[in-house]
Image 1 (cartoon, rainbow, N blue to C red):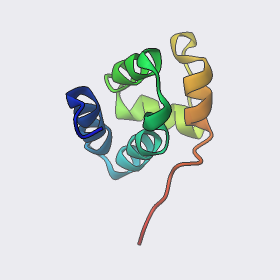
Image 2 (tube, helix red, strand yellow; image 1 turned 180 degrees about the vertical axis):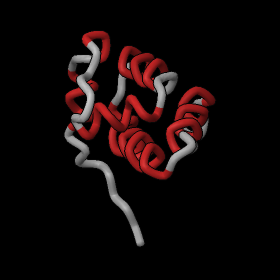
Image 3 (cartoon, rainbow, N blue to C red; image 1 turned 120 degrees about the vertical axis):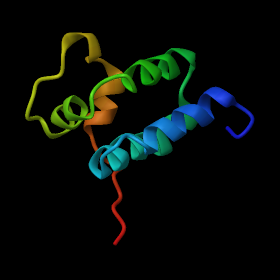
Image 4 (spheres, rainbow, N blue to C red; image 1 turned 90 degrees about the vertical axis):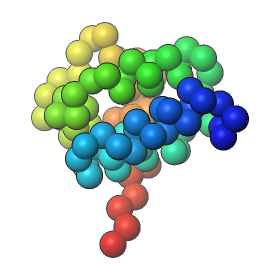
Length: 88
């Protein structure tokens, strides 16, 4: 990944969302799964980065419904939240 400018940029954006909750959620998702993504999945994540933190967290917590445009395998994987690790 260090040689790929797009992936470096996505990693930075994933971990610098603006709120700690979004950083852990989006950054953790990136860290856990990015190595296995194909071009289509990378493009999905790149578009996902343009969404508001409040919406992403709302989708993750189930407090707001996921819009149809985001439904699919990548969102299903995201909603598992099996990648969030908060260190003390």
